[in-house]
Image 1 (cartoon, rainbow, N blue to C red):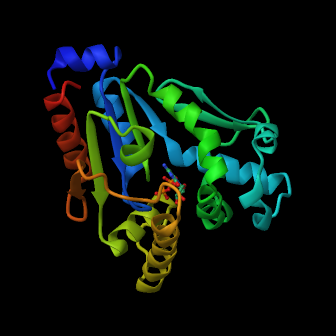
Image 2 (cartoon, rainbow, N blue to C red):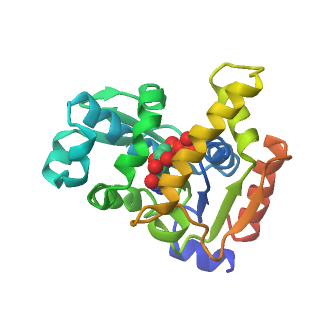
Length: 235
Ligand code: CDP
């Protein structure tokens, strides 16, 4: 697609969809790519995390999540407000960007994300964020369901042990031992299993996505590779 046609489709630039399994580095990569291009970053996982946190804080037990009504979801008061580079998540007016990364949320979020009504409830907010383009969105179903017409789709993969090491490093454990790596890899793979096998919008590679294996790639190299692909498509 030429720059001109893409500009007509989305006035602020192209849409880049970045999907992949847990801990594959989607969010940090998406944030850095957005910064390079002067685009906004939409971390869709943060929205599922905020809904999960809000339901847990409201005392709604996981068994009741599959029957959550849109009105109940409205009352949970979850909002993503455009911030400098992305979206700041709040629950009942309180900023929750750090809390949504807690182990309790990690352990429950895939269960919430499997609920079709929850995904539907979120869809308008996610699509609205992309209405003008100039967006790097990351998640599980961005290239397949949320923005199937994204100009660039990338599917990020990496070995489970490497993903686990990166995730542990992020949480301040610079040199994890083998047992810690195995434990974290099992947790990530458990989430991938739930995300890939659910009935609604499962984790999947879009047929027209570029697969990027980051196991042996430096962070900056993977960012620059996606920026290069984006520029080739009018970004
Ligand atoms: O950063 P990490 O890979 O650990 O996960 P995340 O992107 O924050 O997503 C957390 C969870 O939200 C995932 O495990 C999925 O269950 C769900 N999710 C989803 O179902 N669809 C998306 N587009 C994004 C996240």
